[in-house]
Length: 313
Image 1 (tube, rainbow, N blue to C red):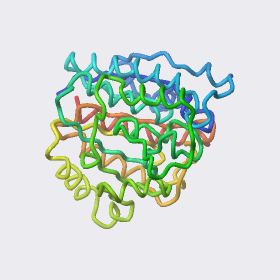
Image 2: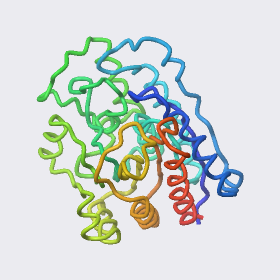
Image 3: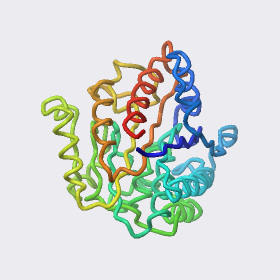
């Protein structure tokens, strides 16, 4: 039995497609359509976002709206750390995936000396930096920020001094950098990776379970092997990007990719992982109802969320 708290961060300043900030409310609407009282039963805290920056021209082409992302890292990090220190399990309901760096910072603020493992269930690796990003969108950078990774060897951009200074501040939020190590990351359903990221994944021998492996070996075995790989960690954080699921299930995310896991596989996988006593935080992100039909992605995501919460309390 764990006391659970929702931390809502309706931010989409890290994404290239508009609409992810509406994802949290779309999940809530799905809960109402199902007649669920989940959002009545569980305390919820909403973190102020910086979405007003969407109406301004992005100042830094290789790290768009990074000042806003830095502010969110600090606010979200504080909320996550305080929640954990109060012996409550935070479930972060996020817009775009850039906020995950703030969540990781929060865990490390609460437990600075603990070794943190990350299970990243996502179609994308999210280890770009301002030096390597093809788009400048910050939702492709949260793991690089948490790893303190610049990937200068594969530099394709020349960010200006102010961008570099802000990026360095982002990496150091929470007073610890790096916050995680490559050997303590497990990717599941990863399948859309740029060459600069592939270089880092291969160089650091990062553990990856493909969709085909999930299908071939079954969810139980993948979950067991993922947790075994992180057995040296004191704590585990699970980040679930809904684009880990196949694009045929729903178009309701900004960057859908073919050959993903099914909603049933995602739900079963998360239920199995969340039961591990080391798991200290769970995050869901990238639901975008503006791209969807009949709120299908949010409904699938709500069903998964409900299963996860039922395992915790």
